[in-house]
Amino acid sequence: MQFLKRKEAAASETAATPETSGTRRKFFGRAAAATAGAAALGVPMVSRAQTVSFRFQSTWPAKDIFHEYANDFAKKINDMAGNRLKIEVLPAGAVVRAFDLLDAVGKGTLDGGHGVVAYWYGKNSAVALWGSGPAFGMDANQVLAWHYYGGGKQILDDIYKSLNLPVQSFLYGPMPTQPLGWFKKPVTRPEDLKGVKFRTVGLAVDVFTELGAAVNPLPGGEIVPALDRGLLDAAEFNNATSDRILGFADVVKNCMLQSFHQSSEQFEVLFNKPKYDALPAELKAVIDYAVQAASADMSWKAVHRYSQDYIELRTKDKVNFFKTPDPVLRAQLAAWDKVTAKKAEENPFFKRVLDSQRAFAERAGGWAFDTNVDFRMAYNHYFRRAAAPAKGAPKK
Image (cartoon, rainbow, N blue to C red):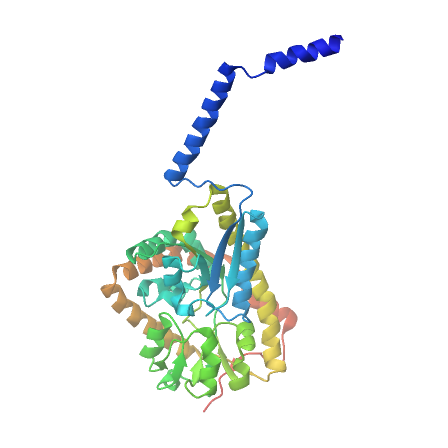
């Protein structure tokens, strides 16, 4: 009986009175008004149960390892976001052509994309400085260091704003030095490039034009068919794995290793900025950390896969690899200096990027060259072979 009395007393104490009911209605009314006000002000109101889906496209064929890298990035986002953000990546051409990706993301036709900054060279030549040229002696990882800690990111953001392109850009994934290219006849001197129908992109178009080549900047998936049909005499794309997958060795058997035309390139992930800005802070943080994680993972995977396919190209596909002769490399640097001097006079953004890169490279490069040991010495000590894999170009 005492228990029942206590229960009845507790019930009477907590029973809603007209006064408490009115207070509760006022509270919920204010909460609803606050929610509506936040929505009106554009404040993100993303439920933890809600999934935001983004449709991306890469600039790469579905079979290329670059498209695999794009999917690797998306998977990291999807795994870390815990069903709150999902990214689907389509291959090049699924919605737009590779070179049209930037506009498609800016307009909202796509929510995002994966490519390289050099592909937007036609928008403003300065953007190609993130991927083309010798970068004052910096490797790709040092260029990324300049981008995130030396002022490069702010300049790139300013360029996109000047183009009225509402995109959020993230650079990641340092690439190894790219070959001079695949040639039907090996290059032994700078003069051998004159009149050669050659594929490249970015500022490398201007450099090879300065060296006398007839340049055609085709997307990656169109290169091998053009070589096969004789529309190109030579071409470069990027690395042993991509080149093998795309079928370069089926149509050309000579590859020239080492070049300054794209020695420090990296990837770019793009988001439509209004859609990115609408994400809550925690999902933006997921994207930030996914970029960093994917950057490291891509560089590790590249070492593993590229070295495997380099051996396959040499042994199974019978490709002849040659080191690009030093006179050709010096001619590239001289051509680069001419091209960049002219464009710096014409384009204030171009000069701004060059000045910023130069200042960072002088400090970072000097430190790196003074600090890092010559790893080739140790490699030769343990693995010296009778015949070097990349021999000098044959003499005429």
